[in-house]
Amino acid sequence: MQQQTYLKGCLSAIVLQLLQENRRMYGYEITQRVREITLGELQLTEGALYPTLHKLEAEGVLSTENALVDGRNRKYYKLTENGHQQAQTAVSELTDFVSNLQKILNLKPSLG
Amino acid sequence: MQQQTYLKGCLSAIVLQLLQENRRMYGYEITQRVREITLGELQLTEGALYPTLHKLEAEGVLSTENALVDGRNRKYYKLTENGHQQAQTAVSELTDFVSNLQKILNLKPSLG
DNA sequence: TCTACATACCAAATTTTCTTAGGTATAAAA
DNA sequence: TTTTATACCTAAGAAAATTTGGTATGTAGA
Image (spheres, each protein chain N blue to C red):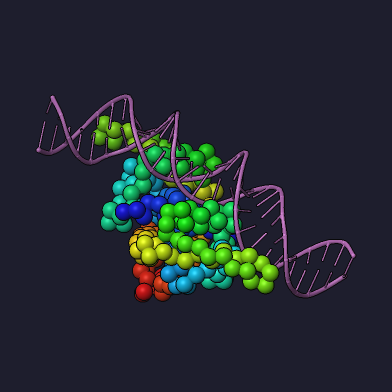
């Protein structure tokens, strides 16, 4: 459960990866998706996620659209045209990083 | 080359992994070893490494012994008895983290 | 000889980033 | 009606890295 420590620095790239796979997502959804994928082992905290989303939006990587669903506000984020390129770069770098961590940890490389 | 970003938080665990494999190592050697293993893709900066080593020593995870080699000072670090357990825990958690990153990135799990 | 580069250690100011700890609000379930 | 889930957010503080500087020796090249 102390895996959170290692997450530092990867947050933006994880968000961008999820938004490559999903046309649009909202913040809370992102936290839940990561929790699902990692079977509860990784939990994004909102205090880290929201500032990151705002930063990516300010950088022009993400754009937003608001929606009212079941009486609650949602703020959907999606990649901008420029954002798609940045996402590809970030995900590719994170993939390389994982590969390097595997080498350091003496793990066999991924089959992917 | 911007993989450095993702390294945040993993530094201690990487050091502990290398010290599980090598009885003792000195700081500069650690930076070079990581560079070798990752074919130059990951470079530990000294400004990050040395404070980390000092912290691990202060915590009783590592102990040191000085040596004079070819007219130059070296400070060897090795795991303390307690440190071996902490190293196992840290490496195990980092391995789990890598596994979770693979899931998020849609990579096949490791064969290791 | 002088310079540059590799080796080998370190500290401190700054910046970046996350954690912690709050806050607001609606809907559903107990 | 209280708790839990949903859904957004901010701000103070802490943690960790980057950046930039320093010291010092040995070696290779111009």
